Length: 134
Image (cartoon, rainbow, N blue to C red):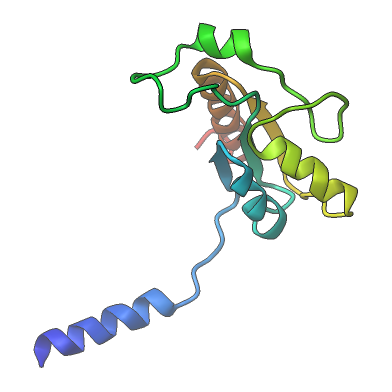
């Protein structure tokens, strides 16, 4: 019964509302990433979304794609921009915007690991500056 009581206490702790963090940085690489962008992320949050085109044979090659390969194949279209992008959240965000659903968070696009790393660094620098460097 001791284990049962401890299990109940843990469940109660998990159900308690938690304070929202000052900022959420959400990193996504697919069309499903518009759900948090439209329903969870707020004006102080950031969505880092993958832009570009899907690999022709996504399962046809093992190992990571290099930044050079990604850069050579990628077309990035900003939300609401012209052109077409066939992969990730950008086309879905554009369709949502056409229906009046616009995320309140900042949306930044990454194509390569290097670009993602740079964007994450910028988010960390902004957070440090906002908290007074603490």
